[in-house]
Image 1 (cartoon, helix red, strand yellow):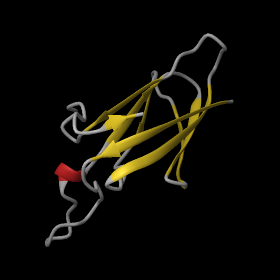
Image 2 (cartoon, rainbow, N blue to C red; image 1 turned 90 degrees about the vertical axis):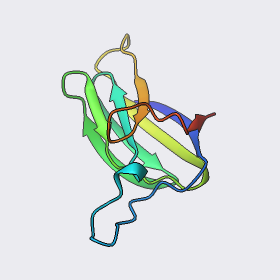
Image 3 (cartoon, one colour; image 1 turned 90 degrees about the horizontal axis):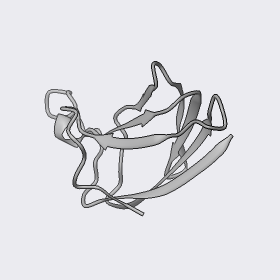
Length: 104
């Protein structure tokens, strides 16, 4: 397996705080799309996000809850072959790139 770690900084908390009618605010939802092969396990700020398998080269970590400031993302990836690559992209619910986040 391969371990990948990065910090994700958010200017504000991005959490699933349900609105008055019990429905999550879609403006706060963050998704992490992973492009590659094999399977992957993720943890954010020490909490497991679970394990997902790639389907046709794509796996998605849905509705990630970010704290304001620095967040620590760790991925454990089991590629299918040594030549495989992994790409990580963050987006909002409308599939637009998350431009308010910074990475380090």
